[in-house]
Amino acid sequence: MPSLMSNYSRLPVSFVRGEGACLWDTEGARYLDALSGIAVCGLGHAHPAITRAICEQASQLLHTSNVYGIANQQALADKLVQLSGMENVFFCNSGTEANEAAIKLARLYGNQRGISVPTIVVMEGAFHGRTLAALTATGNRKAQAGFAPLVEGFIRIPYNDIDALHTLATQQGNNIVAVLVEPVQGEGGVVIPAADYLNQIRSICDQNEWLMMLDEIQTGIGRTGKWFAFQHNGILPDVMTLAKGLGNGIPVGACLARGKAAGLFQAGSHGSTFGGNPFACKVALTVLETIENENLLPRVQALSARFMQGLQTALADVAAVKVIRNHGLLIGIELDRPCGELVKLALAEHLLINVTAEKVIRLLPPFILSDAQVDEIVDTLSRLIKNFTH
Ligand SMILES: *Cc1c(COP(=O)(O)O)cnc(C)c1O
Image (tube, rainbow, N blue to C red; front, side):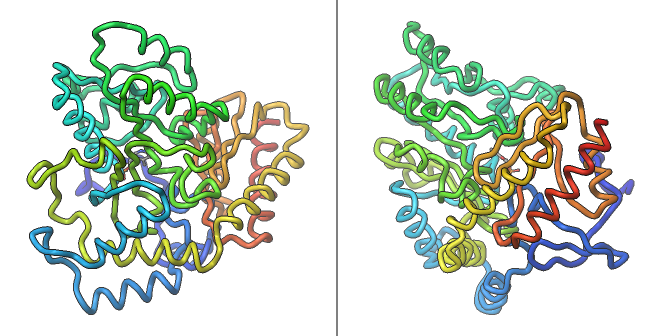
């Protein structure tokens, strides 16, 4: 495909239709989707409620401008605020943009306090997106390679290392204004921190008047069995970013704020042409309503338990499997060796999976799976892993 830039390495398949957890390729062959377009299509493909919302809104109004009031944007903000306990919302079109908004909030916060180089603490192994500031926050040397100079004002510590954060807090003159962290590192290899990690970060941020900024772009919108992963910890962040599952495939991102972070943006501080348009907001609102109407949060927890039981049983005597980790339907199977090849082997069996951090098979299935589909994924995948590692 010489007319496309070469920034993706693509699998030799292309899909033309989807329904529920299934996709059909150009030859009419059916695939089971355990990836959901990388945590995007939580409601699966062509969900009737989403299709209806898209058609109705498309026949009424797609776009006006943030120069005007937008009722759907207000309604989506109200809903997100109600579900999260945050105070207000800025809408954009992707995850990386949501993080740029968060980073700009931290900069405003620092500059208003007279801090000369406001600095954000970020983590090794983090993924926050591909625009320059988000790329700088991302803790992946490969993703950053060749894009120097990166952005000033970030300091990096190991993930899940609360002592390292304590140490920063005791140092003088490091100008820290915020901590930006994922509740689970998805791209980083489904790395799940200590159960009280977020609580500890919350109290260090409180003690030092730093903003706690959670990147819930992968973990939010029900993926972990609650609306947002921080709700497992009984805390509230000061800033939270969302995208991926929020639109079920329609591009939409959001940056939510609370308390001292909620009053930072003033007219003219930040903006987006497309962000929060009537169309994207109607679809996102329908995604949230559908998760509610179909009572999918407990279903995510049940599916997650079925996956874990199935995988633990099927892979119990496979020495090459180091550990199986999950938080809801964010599932990682870590092998003792690089296993990127498994993506192609699974594709040949008409199963869509992902491998991240070289050795971690990652599953991000839709919330609308049947029990039988869970069992099918577990059976196919465990057979492939056994053959691959025997
Ligand atoms: C995917 C992802 C992003 C980037 O989102 P884009 O929409 O691709 O810009 C940022 N943070 C996390 C945790 C993600 O999983």
